[in-house]
Image (cartoon, rainbow, N blue to C red):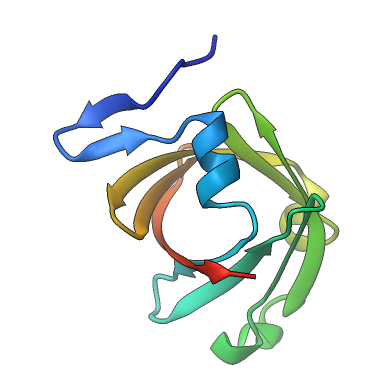
Length: 121
């Protein structure tokens, strides 16, 4: 079941549609807020690739610090699958607008977080 436009979720939040994901997220760097402070950048490239690095956050001590994968849009969800991160398992996200350049994401396992929309790549 797809939505035809933004669906109001809360007073100031709207779910991104597939076309809004394509026009607002794809071709940009998205900065995920991380629980221990800082931001984790992911690059959603127009050719279907996604890549990121956590080297500035010191993630190399815990996991592979950088990875690449692919993204796609399924309905009104942004999906991605990395080579190594998350054991290569695909995951999809519902994205909600919470500010001009801020979004809330909800992963298909129920995990949530926030991110900042950066400049074009």
